[in-house]
Amino acid sequence: MTEVEIPILATPREPLPTISADAAALSRVVTSLLSGSGPIAIDAERASGFRYSSRAYLIQLRRRGSGTHLIDPIDIEDFSELASAINSTTWILHSATQDLPCLGDLGLKPASLFDTEVAAKLLGKERVGLAALIEAEFELRLEKEHSAADWSTRPLPTEWLNYAALDVELLVELREAQIAELNEKSRMTWAEEEFAYLAEWQKPLANGEPWRRTSGLHQLKTSRQLGIVQALWQERDRLAQSRDKAPGRIFSDAAMIDVATKDLKSARDVFRLETLRNRSHKAHADLIWNVRNRVMQLPENELPQRTKNPGAIPPPKAWAEKMPAAAKRWALIRPALNELATSLTIAAEVLISPEPVRQICARPGDSLLAEESMAEFFRQYNVRSWQIELTAPAIKEAIAQLTVSELTEQDQ
Image (cartoon, rainbow, N blue to C red; front, top):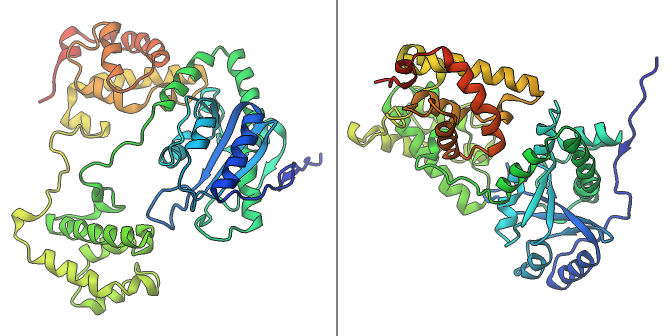
């Protein structure tokens, strides 16, 4: 039997709109949007991997009765007129947490929203990318070859603009289909709670030591090696910010790990590192060598400690040895939650994120003795009511075989 080829949606169904790049053009967009009705589909393109900033370099909007609009925000100073027009409406986004921060920087913040990715997860879809959802729902295939493009490029190529316009082309119709399915499965209240949470969501602040997120940090064995990576990370970040370039385009995490771990004798050795991939990276060989030398001369008490936070809870795989009381509770609770998630045909991390479950196992006190106490504990970690209603009884049933002392026992 011949497989039916799914048609490709390579261009918008309507003519590609002219980019609005100044205040007058933005006012015309606002007038058009106000003439439309219903929720507004919205998306933003950034230059992740190319630029240091996470600003929006293109904004796409679509509304019934108004059509699609493309806004170049670079030279527009005031977005208050657009904010007045759309902030009180419902926005439709896909993966809202990706775009809300850069839109919020422009004063654009929805009163309510609908996230098609979150809806797909609540519906138990295995593939939740926008292209996969469009293909499954409408039997159309979106071209996604420009997803990693440098959107700070000017002028933007027409094929990129087609791609960008398609990101909002079917969001209104997708939302309607998902609402119908959410209602059919009695999960619309779950979605409403998730969307209300997202509407108030703010990007978490970076911790005080963001350099510790360097890829490959686990390879380092000494505080001095950590100090080298810390100093290189800070210097790289300074250069990246001053040039508005992604840090990895200055030099890579892998290069920093090599500089910290290899036996280097001179800047020439740094220059020869394979992890300094290209000429622009190798141009920093002298700087890297000087930073390394400076750290090599520091006294031990000025070097970073190997453990980021001595009081932090270790990962559950280490609990059997380090936290046996927590391990007992985890061994009962986690399988029960996995089983519940499977019965609901949703991912376990959608049912409830792992962190509050780890916390309740590690520091239970009397928080496991009653569902009310458990619910109060979970709310500290932004666990939504629908999640608590489902998981609290499952957890209570799972731990019924433990004694009171085992429930409340604290690891040293």
